[in-house]
Image 1 (cartoon, rainbow, N blue to C red):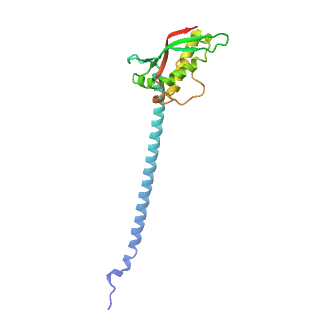
Image 2: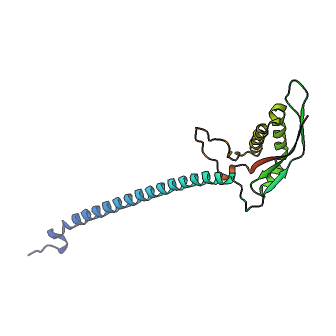
Image 3: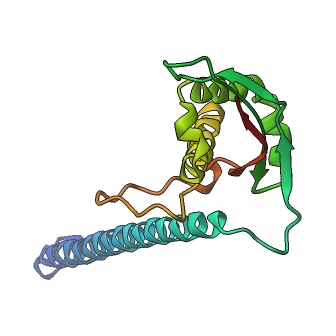
Length: 197
């Protein structure tokens, strides 16, 4: 009587199908978990990045507003410019102005940078002054306006944004606030000599 070898049992044949089915279920569950964790991580990262960007924007707006106000605890830094003698734009008579000014800086470290750009700044100041008339410069409002213009010109010469004006109303269109390192260190222009002849 011949007996069948033990490896050819009919009961062992369905067992591999069950193990494949379990393998597919385990792989499927692992894949779903992996995709879920990846998607959740991506969502968390994007929300964190958006929150950080919003916080940085708020901080730069707050920082630029604080930069415009003078810190009383800090030692002020000033750079005095040489005397400017310039012909004015009056058409009826030859008029000229002798003006000496000092730049107020937000930081003593900025003194060296402003001195390095002094030829460009002096050129910008001369060009601005030569377009003014004696009537514009004799009034107090004209001098205040000139001070703001010279501050903007100094910022342009330095390749930066001028600090915000406290006395000027905000424009209707909201502009993105510049980064603090892009704001000019020149926060004020003070006249020490102002003669018009």
